[in-house]
Length: 191
Image (tube, rainbow, N blue to C red; front, top):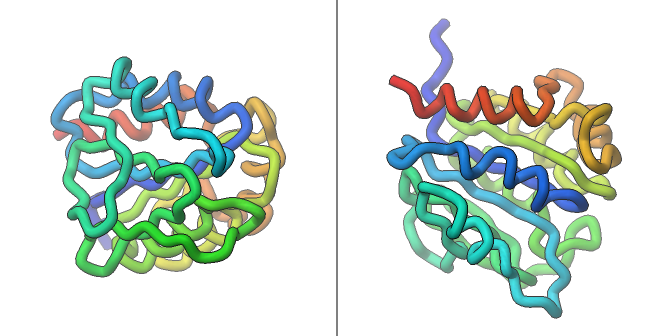
């Protein structure tokens, strides 16, 4: 059976996220074929400076996700500080002020679970460096929906707790180091 084409990528990261994402996102070429959603744990009382940082380094448009906007291919969407980011059934984005999940808002589990419901087998879910358990349940949902679940290799991650927790919850996930994740994502952009 042929695998469904990838329709979206959702990435979650926490402690060590900036350094790790700087090794991946600037490599994604203009015209990338799918939207890329990203949740990074940012303290709610701080402005999210990630968009400015990555917009200066990436060939793809980088923006903070807005409520009710439709997800476009070739755009990197960061969850705003203190809002959960969800993907709705019609592939529009939703921001929510619901309770924290895993002591976090935005929470990686919320993004991955909603994106898995929407994109099913067309979703790539990636859990990277971090120091809590957020993303574990979400990655399990990605795999259960038939999507591609990827975990940054805990042995090489800047902080191993989050990828190790995701792997424990989703043992079928592919384990890739940063170079492997970058290579995998670049292949999605090739004809």
